[in-house]
Image 1 (cartoon, rainbow, N blue to C red):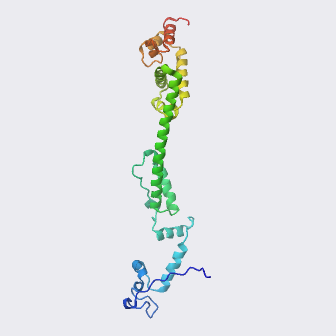
Image 2 (image 1 turned 90 degrees about the vertical axis):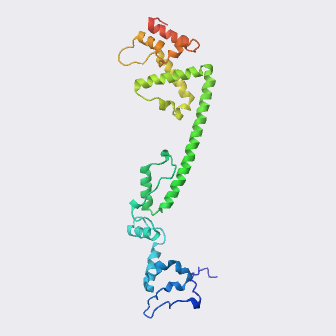
Image 3 (image 1 turned 180 degrees about the vertical axis):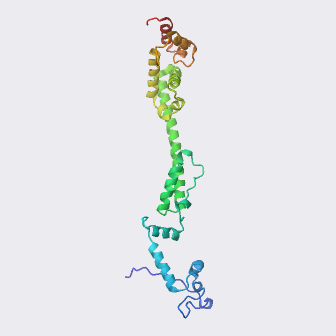
Length: 274
């Protein structure tokens, strides 16, 4: 049984509709020769350029050479491939527009430029790259939203764990940590707000416990640079500076660290040994 694929032959028009003969006596095509075939009429603009069969055959042979994906190292063939399939002729003409509503976190102009350059080099149609960018952006938005939800859930779980461990001291301990970070931020010249809002840190209850412990250590041995701190000045800060880690505990008798704050105040103000 012959499995050879049969070549499709254009269907000739009925005899009464036939125009001039297909070929002239000199072997050239008759004007409008392609109109004899219904399937060829949509390609009139292209076929009208061929006046002789050998020119048409040569063009077809060249087209056959372009079939299949060319080697990017063959610049001439790659240029012919781009021309044959209607791709931009130069890299400058190959641009990728930012999809609508794309978050800044998902759009990197330098990366886009590199991707466009690679797409041009390998003959990727601009609309194909644009479709990939649309899909990437959509998936990126979903990923970011999922991360936000997971971060919020992790922070809630961390807060619940701290509330369970600290009990009634939960709010006071958070204020102590906030005051401690504020003081350390001033000393180091660091904006601590970004640290406080960092999901990776806020979602870790152990980090909050370490900060609370560090705040207590600073109270026992105040950090300083250069000379030893003035005890009376430090005591004055405890009593009057709201940013001091012990101020809240010193002022509120119900604070769980009130006794400790009083002891530190007395030690600094009056030089009493504890």
